[in-house]
Image (cartoon, rainbow, N blue to C red; front, top):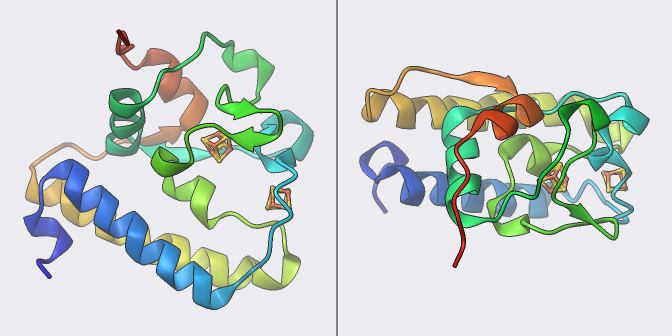
Length: 144
Ligand code: SF4
Ligand code: SF4
């Protein structure tokens, strides 16, 4: 398999996410899918993402109208993520299991280093900001 830095942006990001999912399957931190952590206000949580992750979402999914001040992810529908395939690294790595917190930090750092490699490979200026703010400012893709 090619190094992720040799792949185009979408393929590189998809490869990183796939590798992460395999690693998480081994760690098995557990989740009952309640969706509470996607309500950032209730959970007292700020989700960050890189710019390429936001571009990836906007390119592949419809972004509903939303207000940043509501502090809830607009992709949360009936307590489920409606864009699971395209969700950001921070979404994938987060689990509320307290026994997993230390490992989660290491996993997050490891996979963000890989995303930074992608940036370097494609000579894109690094961008890492709150998810909702970036999503609000990202140009909307008009779906047919
Ligand atoms: S993108 Fe999906 S997993 Fe991430 S915060 Fe939104 S609803 Fe939750
Ligand atoms: S990580 Fe925790 S809060 Fe988030 S959906 Fe899973 S069980 Fe619910």
